Length: 84
Image (cartoon, rainbow, N blue to C red; front, side, top):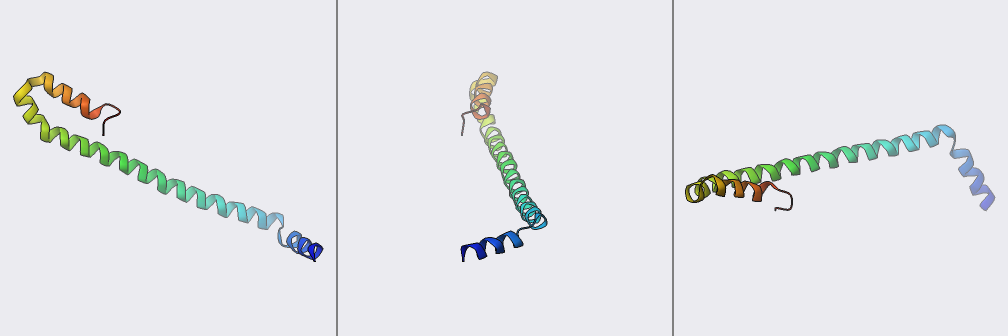
């Protein structure tokens, strides 16, 4: 029985079918990587837009109270790494 299964697999798995199998797998991996990269880029842009809108909303108030130095501190707080 084992020999018959082995011979059946050998007969079914030719170089052409193996190449087609791996090509299909690589195509699927490439599509998934492209989709993931797109989500990553859009997520980064959304985060930057959110920080910019927060800076614009708070910037006028901070500038009126503390001037340019306070506005620069707000900018550094929002746009340096490690901030939310």
